[in-house]
View 1 (spheres, rainbow, N blue to C red):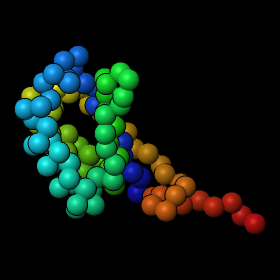
View 2: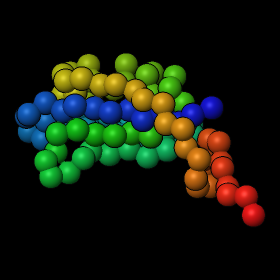
View 3: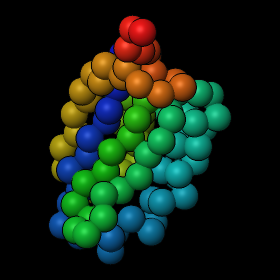
View 4: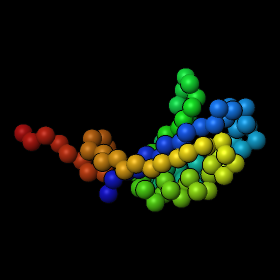
Amino acid sequence: MAHALLFYDLAPDYLERRAALRDAHLALAWDAADRGALILGGALDDPVDGAVLLFRDRAAAEAFAAADPYVTAGLVTAWRVRSWATVVGATAAAPVRPEG
């Protein structure tokens, strides 16, 4: 099973509008992390025009986006999920080591 990356495109006024929704967004994110569905997440910096969240699987990423206050309130202008075939690292979905 592959990991999933959730990409967010953020509204130009995201930084000005996020304060009212940030606690609810972070509560949703920490709940997903505590359940093991969300591995890492955060906004891209300089410029703050997107965000990337790493999930255990596609279903968890899609469910998160559907429930995220940033999405439902329009701070996220578009989102997409991409499967990520992780092969290196302690939590890789399909670890591959060189022979020999």
